[in-house]
Amino acid sequence: MEKQFVQEGSQFIIHTQGPMCTTTQELLNSPLFQEVLLAFIQQQIQEKSPLLKKIPVDLSNQTGQWTLLSLLQYLATESIEDIVRRNPMIKEIVQNMDRVALWTFVEKLYDFWRGFDRFIVCHSENSLDGHDRRPYRTFNAIIENLTHIIRAAYRDICENITGDHPRIYRQVSAGCDAGLIAVPKEWPITHDSCSILNDIAFIRQVLIYPPLIIDPPMNKRTGCFERVTENPLAGMILEREEWLCYPAKVGPLTIFVYFHQSFMALGCTLANLFDIASDVDIQAGPDAIYLFGAPVSHLARFGQSPILFFDDDRNGLLIGAVPGENRFGYFGYLKKMILTLHNIAIMKKGRMPFHGAMIRMVLQEGAGANILIIGDTAAGKSETLEALRMLAGASLQEASIIADDMGSLEIAQNGRIIGYGTEIGAFIRLDDLQQGYAFRQIDRAILMSPQKINARVVLPVTTLVEVLKGYPVDILLYANNYEEVDDSHPVIESCSTLEKALAVFKEGKVMAKGTTTTTGLNQSYFGNIFGPPQYRTLHDELAQKTFQAAFQSGTYVGQLRTRLAIPGFEMKGPEASAKALLILIRERHRG
Image 1: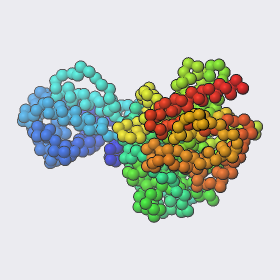
Image 2: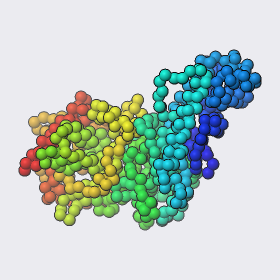
Image 3: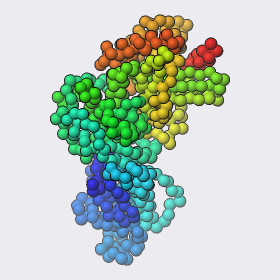
Image 4: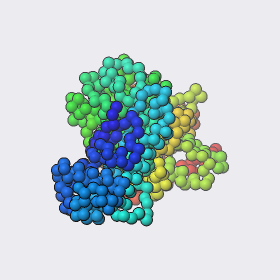
């Protein structure tokens, strides 16, 4: 593959098989620099920038553009005075040029480049000396070196224009925000329609320069995923070089997530949420396949909002798809479809999926519990557990996140219910975090639309080992975010019978908080619209068995009033819930 440079909206994507540039001269003579310079000139022309009047060349034609390009190439190694002496053809232009205007032009060009979300894909053959065998060397040789050269070119040009050195140096991100190593892999294709995916490269390693700040086209999700009776892959045509596969390890399952390069930023964000499957997992084949950014015209036959999945029961494969439209350019569509596919596949394996957060806590005095809080989006699950961790403070000996948003429950041979997670990361509303929490974690964070409502952060919070280990559930609660607390409605209320518990969880009431397009008080079956409603009969059977085992084995079952949706209680509600939980943990320890 030759080097390719692709602009997709506000994203700039570089595809390469080897090193980019080794010197600033190579960079400034490269098609990459020429393409960026011309794009910047066109932007300035469209905006009728007054800066253009101070540059004594006509940048609306090719001759003027190439003259400016040549001047910048000279300035990478020579001062303006040296250029004038050695290049009589440029002398008149330089002498009539406002140096401050030229310097400003270069600064704006540099900011223009850095204004893109920038990605580099290092393609490699599936061989013993491929990039994925020594990823750190690849990242260092290609990505780190590119960053250094771009920054050096910018500084050299500015110094040769001004004739002075900066007093303050800022090591801002100048190269790419993220790098990927992509390798072709063979996997067992069980259906002819999957053959269109055969030559799409698999991501094997990811390099991110956090904090990575992106602004996707959308910041809300709407609706649920519809089950269809026709395979969406049938008859689909893909431009395979425009696609990559992120083989996600989702709990015990492997899901091949194919995303179009127009959603590159969202695809890279998966690295903070799901671990990458091993070569052995890939060779064994997927439990599910998901196409994020599928051809719009192909999915149009499924309706106005074709966010869908197909259950290929004969081949034991689930296939999901979402079209490549900006209205679906939100990380929630990527994450929740993956988890929907997980939930369906895990139900077929005999486990009950849950939409909730689970944590293992051990206090210094020996008290501890494995706590699972189930509830719909923005019910206060993760917020309460984070408040609990903060509240315990110095008395906390250990706190391990098992599940942040989704997981599954199975019944062990001893009758206890065992909880498992799915993600190694968390996709959290910035507004609902403890003050300053996101900034303490900024060195690992991917921030999404921080200037908008429903701003989100994606953070790694646990390991795949913890997610897959399995822990007995000691406390099982439903997150109620809408009811006030009084003498008749305590923060934590026990469910006295199996029937009452099933009624509370099945009703799944929650007050919307703006994370989706729904408003007001809503009901969702078990607080989980991602799979269980589409397979209600199977889920009812699993829930009955699971909750019965919980009651028989002594698990505390009840509901938790987080009050997250009540104005003024966005922080105080989870904090009060955390205090009540801490009391419950210690009471159960004392017996």
